[in-house]
Amino acid sequence: MGYLNTKGVDQNTFDVIVIGSGISGGWAAKEFTEKGLNTLVLERGRDVKHQKDYPTTNKMPWEFEHRGQLTRQLIEENPVVSKCYAFREDALHFFVKDKEHPYVQDKPFDWIRGYQVGGKSLLWARQTQRWSEYDFEGPARDGFAVDWPIRYKDIAPWYSYVEKFAGISGNKDGLDILPDGEFLPAMEMNCVEDYFSKKMAASYNGNRPVIIGRAAHITSPQQIHLDQGRAQCQNRNLCQRGCPFGGYFSSNSSTIPWAMKTGKLTLKPNSVVHSVIYDDAKQKATGVRVIDAVSKQATEYFAKVIFVNAAALNTNLILLNSTSNRFPNGLGNDSGLLGKYVAFHNYRARISAVHEGHLDKNSSGGRRPNSGYIPRFRNVKKQETNFLRGYAAGFGASRYNQGAEGWGEDLKKSLLNPTLGPWYVGSHMMGETIPKESGQVSLDASKKDEWGIPLLHVKVDYDDNDEKMVKDYLEQLTEMFTVAGFKNIETVDSKQAPGLDIHEMGGVRMGHDPKTSLLNKWNQLHHCKNVFVTDGACMTSTATQNPSLTYMALTARAADYAFNALKTGDL
Ligand SMILES: Cc1cc2nc3c(=O)[nH]c(=O)nc-3n(C[C@H](O)[C@H](O)[C@H](O)COP(=O)(O)OP(=O)(O)OC[C@H]3O[C@@H](n4cnc5c(N)ncnc54)[C@H](O)[C@@H]3O)c2cc1C
Image (cartoon, rainbow, N blue to C red; front, side, top):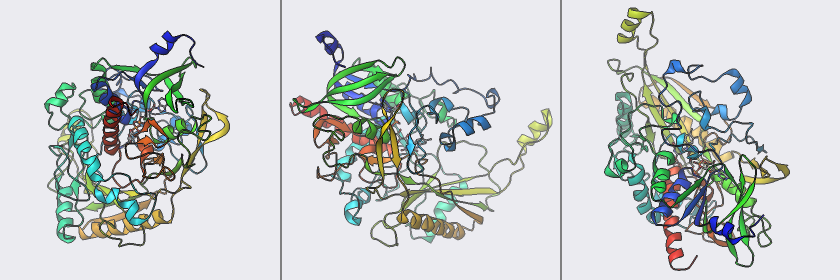
């Protein structure tokens, strides 16, 4: 590969290359183009244009061949991705199917992916909470992983920055475990969620708050959202189809078109990044090798700065596959830790019950793309259990028509006078896991995909800490449900494999010391300063929060640093 004629090189040369157009890559594209830098975004999947490429967005249930359900054949052909709750008939086209992109499960791992412009930003559940000081200081305090090279104060202004643009709804709850953000009006709890929240506040001295979820939905559009062409969330609850209103944040509705408007963005879909090119003489990365997804033709692109935002595990894969004389084991991998300390969120446990009160009300009159949230309450200020760290939890209550009957006029009457059952309540666990050296991704020595890229091996698992945490969650939530007077309490440990949480993190972790980490406090590779990683791969620990807001803030922060370093000639 390479270019003999300089015109070719010029045409393929940019100020910045961003690999991946999902949540984090979209932010990198926005930041660099706004600052006037010629930016190339390389995306392995097809293009998905906001509104135009959401084929199911306005379909009625009866317009789907299987009324939204999966066929037996689809489930059999997709044992992994069909486990994801959002993999349904209306959103199949935004998910990677099992056979399309194989990987090797050294231990069971459900890898859920979206390969297209926008990545998983079209599919995510939009829960967006800030990390707190307790999360950043966690590894140092509790003696695991390595110390984060940043603290809450370093990222707080960047949380504010991305929240204002993305549009995050929520209440200012005043909790130090879950710092408040720049919120649009919060969605409302229903009467049973509100009852549970009040009951918990009274029963646990305010130490187990139950709040409405903080979610990336525009509940009251501000000028900055209207400028993006986005409108108020309509509570359609059809988000995974792509929202024609831009009511929730996605790269497709927000950062990518915003970057495009600057005239500085070149977006190349169907461009599979094979590896980053390292120049031994210049002692820096000079570009990337790309295989055209369709023609399989190889091309090289060049830039001063490279942001790797292919989502956590694919970012590991690209760096491991970026070998050179200087870095025979992967780019920046002098420590030998590239691909190690991969962790995830423990979503194994859930609990459900029945609430016999509030029978004069129901929840079928309104839709809301959100639910309640219980921030972490275990081991926050001090160690109080036999396991490290803790869990957050979702909480929701609903009451539905038990089934409409009849035809024509009878059906209408039955719908207007529904037969309502009791209220159902439920919660699911979102546990922090401890990154371990054995939690690792690596490249297969011989098997390659059709683009000539080695298959990824994934070897991550639960440990004793996770088992104890599952037990504690089920005990504590059973106690809380009992205190609330809920009946028929049922608990489940699904034993689901890691991965289905879709919050895989690590492998290229941040840290102070190049001997024990890959990235510095600005998300730069310690040993190759013009390459930055700002997706989940950079995470030193996992906390309990849904992670994407943190990826957005880290990306904007690192892009600002890279821009200034370019200006001063440091890059
Ligand atoms: C059903 C579901 C619910 C979720 N709910 C939440 C939630 O409530 N809150 C939350 O914070 N997170 C949630 N997530 C996770 C969230 O979607 C991810 O954290 C987020 O999208 C990660 O952003 P990213 O930029 O790292 O990766 P992605 O958004 O996945 O984007 C990565 C992009 O890189 C591209 N790419 C990969 N490899 C290459 C290559 N070699 N060359 C070129 N391009 C490449 C991919 O095609 C993709 O477009 C959810 C995810 C799913 C699927």
